[in-house]
Length: 196
Image (cartoon, rainbow, N blue to C red; front, top):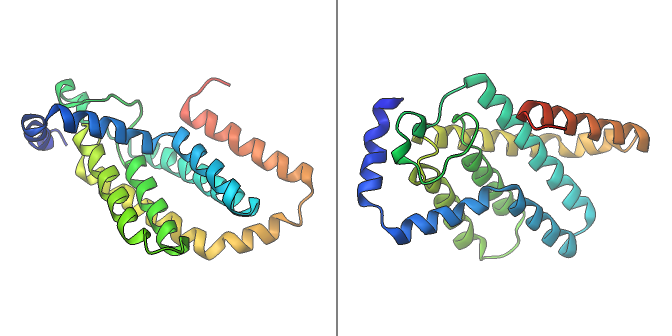
């Protein structure tokens, strides 16, 4: 992968302070705070069932991404040369969680957002967030493609199985549901190495 560093040198050579700051700010769209703000916004506008469904999907997507990164264990580009990075993010490189989120959220918006605005907002969000990961020096282009593929897989699984899963979970007691959620949170905490 280190042979791909020429791309990052080219980006650094042609970058500007404005673009640097713009893409650093774009990183917020790949932060948990963004997804929590989005969920809070949706909770006001939509039934709580939709917000709960999306929270579960986003949390599941984060776990899926950590599992893939742990399986592939590919170092980030800046580990070969720290001068190429505008940000340094911990964890493995492949697949890009930001590109996965961009693909997943874009597909959800195209499928469920009932406005013509989606045809402008979604492609802009998808392309800028995806490109930002390379511009910032935190992902190789192949990481982006891997993130798009994993995001599309998650969307497909969501479309096929979410009603079946919700139906099955509705048969569980509140205690069983609470135990499941607690177990998932604990597993994610362990996978990401966060102290509990």
